[in-house]
Amino acid sequence: AIALGGGLIAPAVLDCADLDLVETAARVTDLVERARAKKLRGAEVTDATFTLSNLGMFDVASFIALVTPPQVAVLAVARSIPRALVAADGTLSAGPIAVATLSADHRAVDGADAARFLASFKRAIEHPELLSLEPVEEQS
Image (cartoon, rainbow, N blue to C red; front, top):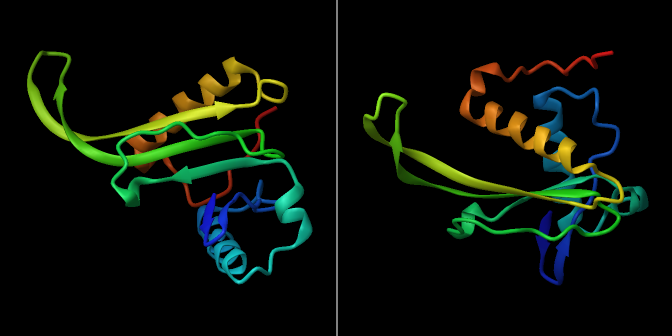
């Protein structure tokens, strides 16, 4: 989701399934620049996809984003804030905690699949060393 002077737009990074992390970041940067210059292609604003909305830079600790058609889901990510963490053995420490919420159009997305996505997202954020710069191969 990209904030523009006249409101919010949620364009799509098209044909991204086989992109690696670096290519995806470059495509997102290009998309943001073209959105701000009002040079998006039609399919980038009409094709259904998944939206990422980040309000962390505005010091927002949590929020719930609304799905903007034709999108089918939106992940809302807020800023991390230090909180007390309790280990399995009961010891306390401090660590950054960020709130992420997922809103999904249940006509297109099953709730159990959405929950599995959030679990995968949580694992990736907690263990970034598991992320790869290589595209993920589809499992059969």
